[in-house]
Image (cartoon, rainbow, N blue to C red; front, side, top):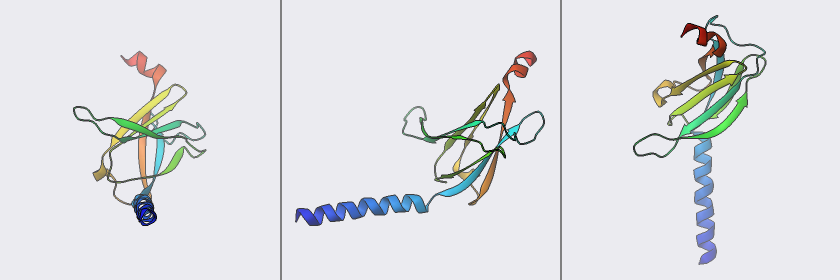
Amino acid sequence: MKVILVILTTAFFLNCKKADVEDQITIKINSIDKETKRIRVNKFDTVIIKKEGKGYLMKTFNAIGKYATDSTGAVTVKIDPSKIYDISITGIEVLGGEIIYPENFKSDQQELDIEVIHLNKSKNKL
């Protein structure tokens, strides 16, 4: 009896894991310079992706990955389109980010452009 219970429990958890992988979509995140409106090529910025967690009064976001942009200024990741994500981009003297809601995910292989600002130039404008 215990063996059957262990087998059924294991099968249940394996099916849940498989369903999570099947529901994911692939997105490409581009790091865009706000001033020039061009992709930041060969800058190798860091992209931090956080997924919505549990929270009653305030939403919490748990980090799920930290990636470096490639030479084309982009990162390709798989995410669950039914969740809210906080995507931040940091680099040398640049910072940017955006919160992405489920309705923003239209299809697989979608591209998201996130603009970054230069920190040293933004201080002069204040």
